[in-house]
Amino acid sequence: MSAHEVQEIRRFNRFYTNLIGALDYGRHLYTPFTLTEARVLYEIAHTQQVDAADLRASLSLDAGYLSRLLSRFEESGLIIRGPSERDGRRQRITLTEDGRATAKLLEERSCDSAGTLLNRLPPWDRARLAESMATIRELLGDTANRPEPVLRLRAPAPGDLGWMVQRNAALYAREYGFDLGYEALVARIVAEYGERHDARWDRVWIAELDGDRVGAVMCVRDGIDTAIAPADETPPRTARLRLLLVEPEARGRGVGRALVSACVDFARETGFRELVLWTNSVLSAARVLYERAGFELTAEKPHHSFGRDLVGQDWRLPL
Image 1 (cartoon, rainbow, N blue to C red):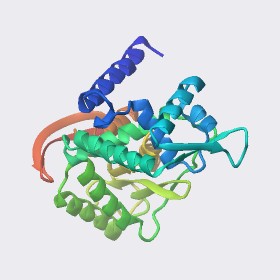
Image 2: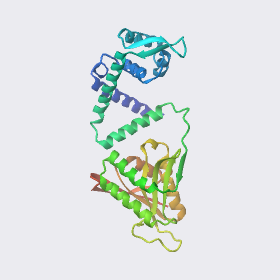
Image 3: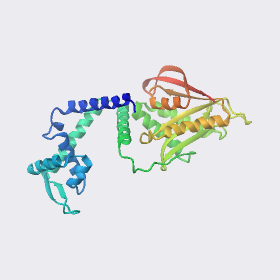
Image 4: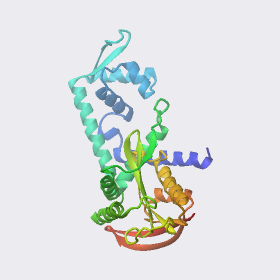
């Protein structure tokens, strides 16, 4: 752990708390409740058979503070306290009709507040933000008892090539704002593979986590769309990595690294002299994977494609 990493976390905390505070103006969500009070009401409303001890443990609240807070709720007619059905020594907490209405109001205003934040961003940035927040929760959450998902790379089965087209089109539209032109390009690439691939030189891998499709990649001889496979066993000089895809929920789990490695290993073992790829600069996460695998950026060129102004990039890995 470096001092820079510590400062980055603290800087993010300051930024986010200031951002939320700027939206709330005083009490939480323009209501008479503090953020802690609103969170307690949320937990009561969304948990079946909640006890005071459960609230204290799940929210890490001081017992005395929680008791005073619940007393205020009871005096305001928001909750009823009584013996727990599971353990008579515990207090069972139930929302009254007014309590349910208050919790519903807080839920609606919380959604509106989040919507205000998201509406500032274009669709592809909203997707990136949501995925980044999911990554933060995953990395900093309690994963001690969660079994590690099993990653498997396999050959494509019927339906997988169509899935590659659909998922590439949907994800790139959501994350980067690409239009139907990108889907048309992916469809042509996949169709060319389906019609002209030669198992000696061309491969597709489908990545699965616990049996669910979460990624894909293609490694083909360069010019598969126009070239005829050589009749002998001499491979073409250049292989091309295409259509690297990792589903958002699988990112950060080594899926992209495994797919890129599969391409590199196949190209090297088959006898290609180099592995190349074309991508766009906005795909920053993929760029990290390529750099780690040893690819070098050889050229960049601005272009307007898929409804956006982009910077295309050529990458090369000598084998």
